[in-house]
Image (cartoon, rainbow, N blue to C red; front, side, top):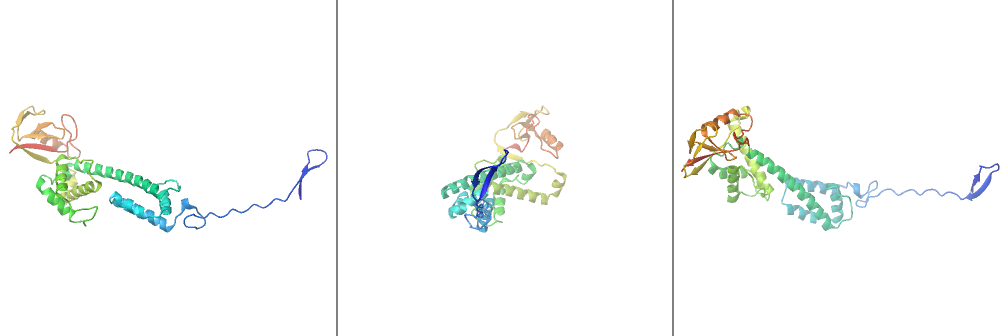
Length: 290
């Protein structure tokens, strides 16, 4: 038996005896609560079934199917697997959520990803519409629906790529005419419009490769039929002009044909701006007497 002895004084003094010290009990190795394997816990579990489910979920989100399709698929997964998938997919701390709460958190995260991708795609399509040379082929608006149907026929008809309707073709014609995409359109519709515009631009470059080499900016002059004779004083040359020798810019200012043509020819590598308000010119409208 061990003893504690006080050696501070002249003579050693035994304070009290100490019993034998019991050895420390070894700690049990970490065991995962899901796969029951040693060496890790449930937060860091890399079970093949879990990782395969997470990979499958990410592939589904990248394909952007209808939102309810992903939610229905999540409802078929066991709650224990959903908890671990949630911690790996959305970096949410592992807690024992109910199945409904797990699906609700997934729906919020996936909806946010859908919203960001829709916004990014909308900006890309809007930028493509504002480039004049992309729409060099749109001078004949009557051909746009048939060109759009021919483009969609190249792909397999599916839930995310349905057959184009008359309303969708009319909407595309209106978008090309106004150079503006409504924000209420669904992701797949905007994506298909954007791909169609880029496809037609590639066809235009193959037909006229010189435009690609010189980086020349083309402008579409949309002809609008009217019954009234318009007469203005051109702000540049200060001469009186009348229809059809009047061009209207995107911002609404009107100039004579000769002056605007001179302004456009001075800009070959960057976007032309309005001579009055300096706003970008995306389209030109010419009124003609019907």
